[in-house]
Image 1 (cartoon, rainbow, N blue to C red):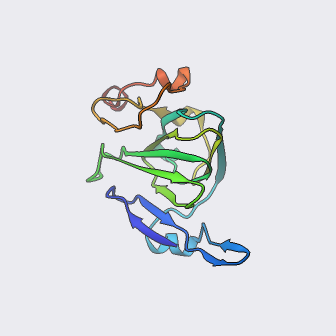
Image 2: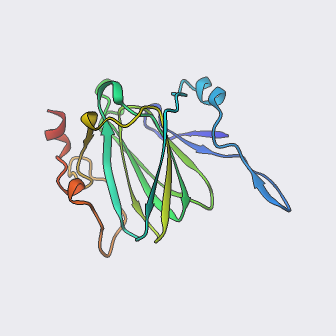
Length: 180
C-alpha cells in the first residue's frame, strides 16, 4: 500500500498496490503492521456500508466525541463519491481544516481519517456504495455532527441538481455552535 499525506495531520490517502495479470488484479486494502508503522490506529471494531441509490445524496458531516472518537478507513466500492474530512481536534495544527477527494470503485483509493475528524460525502453517481472500517463501535450518545454547508468551513462541494439530505443532517448545527 502507498500512503499519501493529505495535508491534515494524521490523515492519509491509501492507495492499494495492484498485482495485475490476465485474471484481473489482487491488492491488499488493510495491513495492521503498515498502519502501525505510521502511528495510525489499527483497532478495527466495526465495518459499515452505505448504499446510495441516487446521485447527489449528501451524508454528513458526522463524528463521535470522547472515547468514542472513530478512526475511519473509507472506500467507495461501487460508483463515485466526493469524500470530505474535517479536523476537529483542538490541539491539532490543522484544527478546523478540511480535505476532500474523489473516491471511486475503479481506482480503489481509500481515505484514512483519525479519531476526532468529522466525515461526510456526496455521491457523484447513482448506485454508489461506501465501505467503512472503523476503530470504535457506534455509540448514539456520543454521535455528533456539523452542517455540510457551514460558511466557516466553506467546503467546495460539487454542484448538484438536487441534493438529497436527511432531515437530521439538515438540522445539524454550525461548527461554532457545536464546539461551544
